[in-house]
Length: 253
Image (cartoon, rainbow, N blue to C red):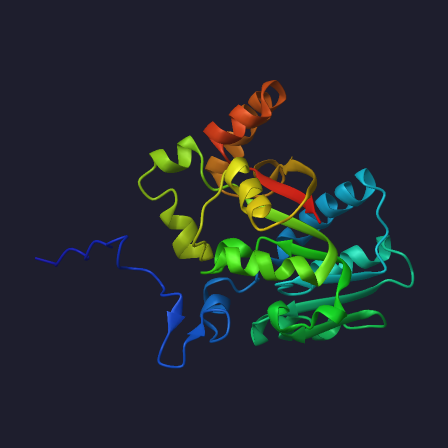
């Protein structure tokens, strides 16, 4: 009689976030690339669309931009044509794997570097700092948010709102985000905004972004689009709290 396959234990069968005695994170040792070979570059057009929406709402035309945790660099590559011609863009990431994707994207006024934004001197600050789907991955996320505050005049945060009734109700609803995407922290709109306020930011503007409507190829994601769109038209806050699937774009100073 064949032995049954061992059941996975969601509390132990996962990729650790810090590996080995060197203390390297999964972003530095190749583990994240192994599990996410596209480095989520397919989501970049969606993110650029949301960035431009905010810039136009606030009539902003930055002359220097830094993308913290720039990944494969597609966001800056696709955003640059919409910025002033003399705008200089920098993409920083702690992952050599991510910056390797950026090699073909380098051009005049578009630069990429393996660098931690926390190591950048304050006199190198930028007009706009992008922090897109980043601080939920960082153990000391409040410390990171505080340190970024001095790195630019405006900061634009994109935060996945993982906490919802449906996510909590499913046994592995949040563990999937932890195991597949290395999310360590989970937010609602209220806790994301309070995090920024507690770190000393002045909140300028914010809106929900419809990740669940414009991204996701799984059948269950496609089925859920219709009720989410219908409910969102009636009550944005309640839809996001109950059904989830949205992120939050926040402009702060």
